[in-house]
Length: 306
Image 1 (cartoon, rainbow, N blue to C red):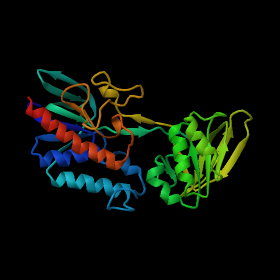
Image 2 (image 1 turned 180 degrees about the horizontal axis):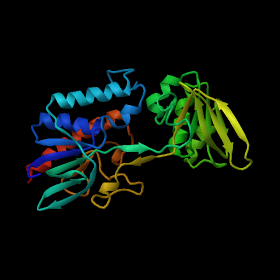
Image 3 (image 1 turned 90 degrees about the vertical axis):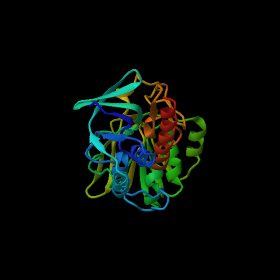
Image 4 (image 1 turned 45 degrees about the vertical axis):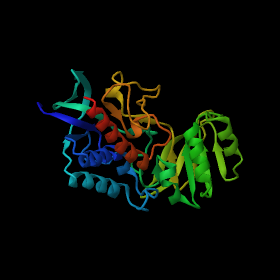
């Protein structure tokens, strides 16, 4: 490709689509590259989104479609391609894909992150039908119901505390006999009357037809099996940033998140990181869309200096 774009956005989740909208409004020449056949990122897998301002109860798929339609109506060009790497020569960056190369002055990396899955029977089948990877997104739908939280780190314990405020009962399933979460979080968790710990236990299966009905547990020390009736399962065993193709190009932390602040600037001039892939306190749809807007502002400042 001989054309040199002002900016190329890698990823079409909320951050990438927000960047597309703001980029079009700014009059930048740009394309959005997406690896999937559909836009939206993790939003697509959320049954209902109840915390996006102005759109309570919207389905994740519908919200993703609205984001995509808005970007398309602004004139955004989408290219389906899997990025394999980025190189730079005399200030022009080349994005390499399996189907060709694209040249640009600036890059916004917004490939998102992927929730680590348990990999047990029933998990994929019941995703969005009681299996969730975001307590703050979906917890309100399980008020006065019984749920299980899988994991033992800070996120799992924070999720359990959050869910315990509205749920009848919360099982916390952890493969060890002690949690890895911060001491103050553990103390708060243990003070809750409606939290039941399932120590030394792993999930063998998530059971249900149209909806989650139970979790089948396996006690790692005794071999005992147990069936716990639950209405929902919240998996909190970590998130993996989709940053493999960019490590070494820009600085990342130990977990692989690209190091960038609210201005989305990375260690590499002209390369910006937005959404769940960057280091940040809160990974939500609304913070991702904010990143997209900030990234375009940072890109405009960068282009003025060229």
